[in-house]
Image (tube, rainbow, N blue to C red; front, side):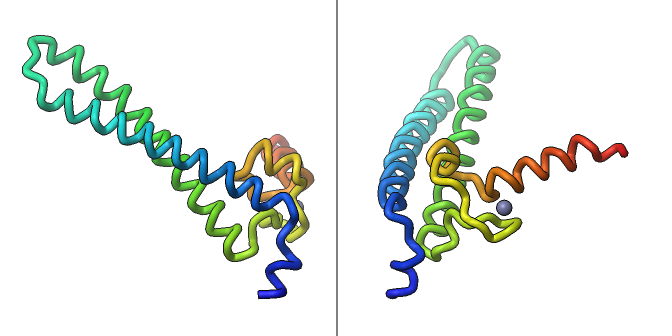
Length: 124
Ligand SMILES: [Zn+2]
């Protein structure tokens, strides 16, 4: 236990709370989306085609929310295991600023840039 306390940066609880709040918000949004979908199924409407179109849009929004919830869960898991904020490439620390702007980042800014460079020069 004492080891993980040493590894845990002071700002981690703040970011963790942010992620949990975000997850809550997304979960509520997803529930609303699901409720809308159900209403669509039950509706006895003459505008079936239009409804179907709406349903697809709503479904896409739902998938987006689900995907983000999954990323948040993975982030929270990494926080629990102590891997959060460690670069998956070099094992170095990911900058606090980067994590607050993009909590799902798995690489430090240097490795992310390296990857971009590699991707850009792939054809050489
Ligand atoms: Zn790195």
